[in-house]
Amino acid sequence: MRTTSARRSARPLAMLISVSASSASIEVDLKVTGMSCECCAEGVQGALEKLEHLVSKVEVDLDSGKTTVEVKVGTMAAAVEALPTLVAAVESAGFEAEPLIE
Figure 1 (cartoon, rainbow, N blue to C red):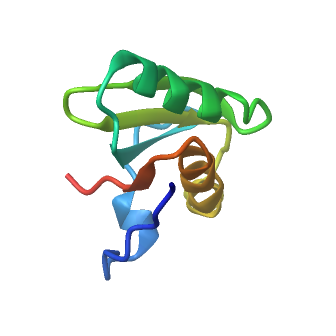
Figure 2 (figure 1 turned 120 degrees about the horizontal axis):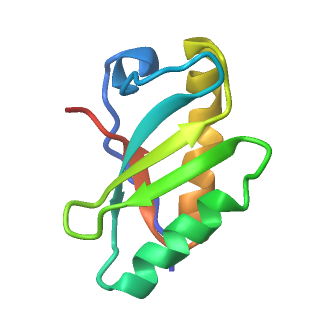
Figure 3 (figure 1 turned 135 degrees about the vertical axis):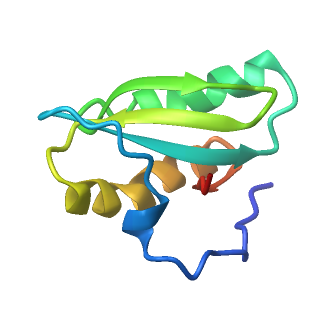
């Protein structure tokens, strides 16, 4: 059963995005919880990769729960707008996700 994290940061979402930007994409880091095995990590990766119109690359670190998503957007504002879609994709796979603050 999927649950939604009630803990949210008071920081503006633009400050939560790890900026590694080229002209065509921005990397967004998510903290994914609930993964316990490689199949879980593959499920998260697959759920995000289904967003072909939005996502160009996904890297999931099972040990830390950090998931880096390369988003096909050209501006920080567009990356912020994409966050709910990314989180929803992870949650649809049965895990919790939130922007990663480092």
